[in-house]
Length: 128
Picture (cartoon, helix red, strand yellow):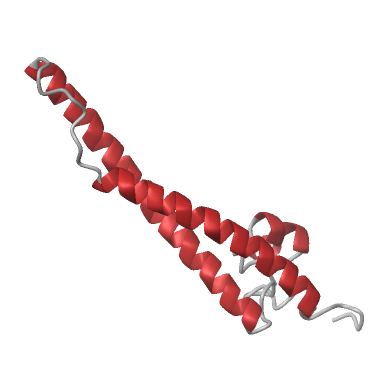
C-alpha cells in the first residue's frame, strides 16, 4: 500500500457524507410512507353506481397497483435500512472502506450510492 494512500475518510469528509445520507434518508422515508398509505388505502373510488364489469376491472387494476406498491415499498424499506447501516459505519469511522479490498471506495461513487460497501473493482469481481 502506498504510504500516501488514505485508509479512511477524514471526520470532515464523513460529516459531508452523513449530510448526504440524512437527506436521502428523509426522502426515502417520505416515499416509503407514501407507498404504505397507497397499499393500506381502502377508500371507495365512487364506483358503487357504475356497471359491475367496470367495478371488477377497476378492482383488478387496484390489486395490481397494490402488489406493485408492495414491491416498491419492500425495496424502499431495504434502501432505508442500507442508509441507516451507512450512518452506523460513519459513526464507527469505517464508512467508505470496501469490505472486500479494504481500500477506500471513491468519494464520487459514494455520493451517487451512499450506502455502497464495495468498490466497483470488488463488485465486478476483479478484486484480487
